[in-house]
Image (cartoon, rainbow, N blue to C red; front, side):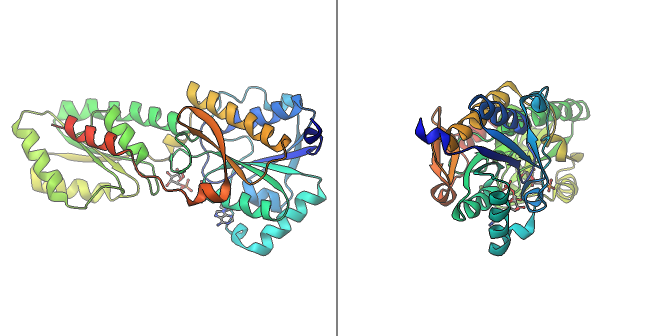
Amino acid sequence: MAEEKKIKTIGVLTSGGDAPGMNAAIRAVVRRAFSKGLTVVGIKKGYAGLLQEDFYEMHPRDVSDIISRGGTILATARCLEFHDPEVQKQAADICKKHGIDGIVVIGGDGSFRGAQALASHGINTIGVPGTIDLDIACTDYTIGFDTAVNTAMDAIDKVRDTSTSHERCSIIEVMGRHAGHIAMWCGIANGAEDILIPEKYDYVENKIINHIKENKARGKKHHIIINAEGIGESQSMARRIEAETGMETRATILGHMQRGGSPTCKDRVYASTMGAKAVDLLCEGKSNRVIAHKHGDFIDYDINEALQMKKGVDEYMYEIYRSFSI
Ligand code: ADP
Ligand code: F6P
């Protein structure tokens, strides 16, 4: 219990791409901290707001009615100057000036590197994984992925309807800067004929073309290709496929609609649990940790170790999709 008195004021910020469920995590931080007698400072626009001292004290009523809302009430930013070690030191000094003993950083790997830097200057930091991409190696869950794949799945179902009516091929591009998790989950959920992900795609377009021709011969009425943003080029791919197969082909890029919307139950509950756990860890005197969900448990790792970890797509999931795609 003596440890619990160490931390008096904590900051909370969201950084990098927003993700549905970030608001649930912010709410959990504020209310868990309040229940432990801590003061919470909301930091606007990620590390950019930290440098501009864009702060406000957050009370439990400030987070009313946000659990069901997408986006982040704290706003977010990509702040390139935070890569500079001198700027990181300035940020830590700003925290000290405002009496901020600890910070909860909700974001992805890049944001955790910023948290790591603050920790090295004596500010206790806890990372909470928030990104629709699911590309944080230490965790099986990231805030926003569940909502994003459900949003994309609904959209792809709609494209599928019109593809079937017109007997077309549709290439649907989903988000995922370097990672194919969204594409693979949607590919399975939507029964796609082909899934193109950066981790596996060999850029041999002829294989897709032959697959379309074979399926046409088998009497298939459409051909759905889920293409990850990391591969991109969906429009030009559509033109080439149409020319080679004779099947009318359209490309749809789902884009930022995948990042918005009301979070699913899973995103609300997991984000709430992670936000609360971040506060608990700070109260235990922990720093430079990141929260993860692994094999069904909420746990934490040292940020340095977490950032060294590697994660690919699930090999078994990739294999089964290929066996369904016949
Ligand atoms: P994400 O957190 O989703 O991975 P980014 O990679 O865009 O998103 O990172 C978000 C922000 O985190 C950056 O704009 C920057 O402010 C900070 N950041 C990223 N990489 C570093 C780094 N190597 N050192 C310090 N801060 C970083
Ligand atoms: O990291 C989440 C993500 O949505 C990626 O899937 C995508 O590549 C990127 O952010 C887009 O970033 P921005 O909103 O800055 O264009």
